[in-house]
Length: 158
Image (tube, one colour):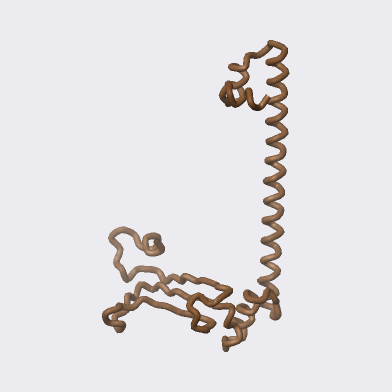
């Protein structure tokens, strides 16, 4: 799918843009104990023949953070595994994560409030319809049509 988005019909294969597919795993997906697994496409029949599609697959294994030599990457993988921000970089990530969590919490609360308002409005309309039907000012058929319901649905609601 990345290739489809990167290459227009009739374009040369060599025009593919470089792309990275990155997975960050808490546990080792290959059970080999490496902190980083990097893959590039090679021919099975002759590994010297490279696809050269400029796609790189990198899988980070946070459970092997202690084996990583690059200190920044080691701190990052430790943060992923232990949720303990020990460097400026990981503290910055932790701060962004908290901000996004707050943003999502706010969004969830906002949506819940809107749903609540919608429910209150809907109940008010149903109550009004029920009152008008009981007083003989509105038929069930007309009330159902105005509320976008079937007569059977309306009868179960009022």
